[in-house]
Length: 379
Image 1 (cartoon, rainbow, N blue to C red):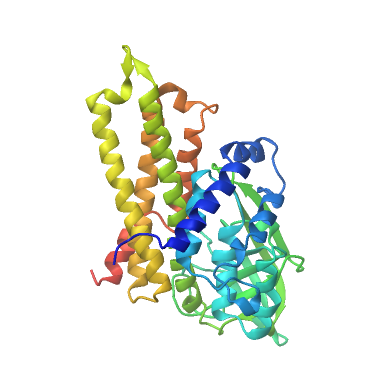
Image 2: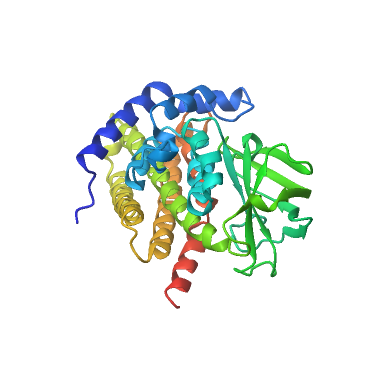
């Protein structure tokens, strides 16, 4: 099957590109950074995206969603990635919302998902505890007390955690850090006693948070899915989020490439465009090949989610490894080919390398996913 967009997806892509171009160029990210926005994203812009139905794309119609697929979601994320738009899309739709949709009971779904689709609720997934991505290395504990649970421990790199209305928290009800079994997911409200959330701002001007759970008590009804079976939720949620993030990265990759090619055609040295120099042509040609390879694997991975294709975990790792490597290449090549001005804050190409560095480490870098792929394949 050809790796091309359908007619409907092409139309959605054009609509998204026009909206993003008109409403959120890279200058908007600079503005959020310089003004130290409390939320870290434009709440009015997010509201407009919600009104377009984007937040509800992967959710069923009876819960307020659009009941579309990851193919359509990837088209939106790709265009957001082109201008580095900061939104709670990943935290709320791809992580928290996806976990609730996959494992929540009817009451939990009805309580949270319509609010996500309407832009009234922000969710965040608090699972990572070390500086490196390692989803099973969870030491936070959940002790059974008085018909509920007491949560204790620390979480790092909680995307948009400081603005989340509800946190999906991974804690151990049994086992030791590194064990796949014994992880349980809990829904924790923002105002829970003993919950401390500290905002951190990353190098790409986006948000993550440090979360401290100091004896946070929740009812048994706060358990998401089965007790001890949290990994069965985390695995598919993270695989899908990893592929979706790769689609956003693809947008940044393409934009950095196209901006640099335009610059090579306009910048003159010795009276001719520098893009006419053979050495720079070779670098651009190699870069183009990497962009196209990344585009192919991202499209195939998005389609695999919608087709419920076996081997999705392996495909997610291949996709993220390729996207991570190509995005870093794009950021570095962009700055080098722009020359000295590429190193300045005045020129926007540097924002793409900063985003590449953070996106590379989000959900595991290329080295992590190559190792994971090999392990899943039995090597």
